[in-house]
Image (cartoon, one colour):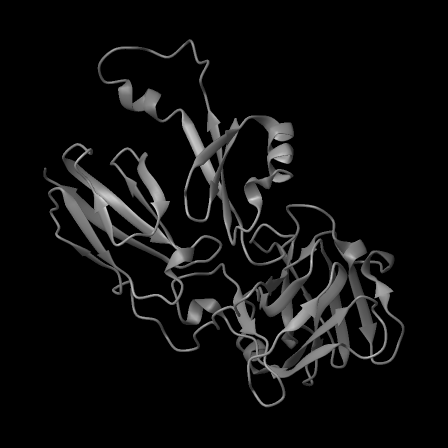
Length: 337
């Protein structure tokens, strides 16, 4: 397999063979100043010798490849985006996860993954807490009386994060300076609750064991590493600090209509395709065009125009999406050059 590196503006595509090549490339100057990177991991069956040749088998041979995209964006993450278990806290208990910044950065918001369990959960309140440097004393930042939310209430998704831009006590946007080194982000349960009705955060068990990076405290007790407690399964807490120069867009709390905001015309298209998608940060969106075999014939950053003259006539599927989120639009497209 190989990894293909694309920067956020898709100025070039650089194949990177093997793990050593990937590590060396990440240490090079190719990655300086990029706000977002996308790694396409491609698996290719290139040495198959027992497949049948001839007419009718071309589509089978053309599908000897699979790929997936990994986004290096504006957030820290230890998880893979899916929750196998959950962790919850009693009232006045706290849990934080340790992150390490390699360079000075700015914390702009926090994303939480709330596994769907029951309706009472939505009536809870918690505080977002942040420590910079040492995990002692009072938090360096506290955002009070935050409510959890289920993403599937506003979009067609069971998997997704809820974004909370940092706000001060007056409800105004704020941020926290993060120098190089450790910082801690988590939550405190502040409303009364009974067991599984408390605020629950997803636990990803498919990857590494992050219990040594997780710390628990009840009221004024000392902090306790989670790997010293019995009965806690290994996994990664699904909290993602969002950093950079801009705060994340808050998750909408009103129902989003079906994907009607994307306008594609003309359809059928001859020569030039035009797209309109009114989003706040279009530079973070990407698009791909697939043929009926599921092969991507075009991939790149979202653009307002796309020439389709080089593609054969037929039916295609256009996908417009924001990497690292559940925001996706698809349209059936007919090319008739």
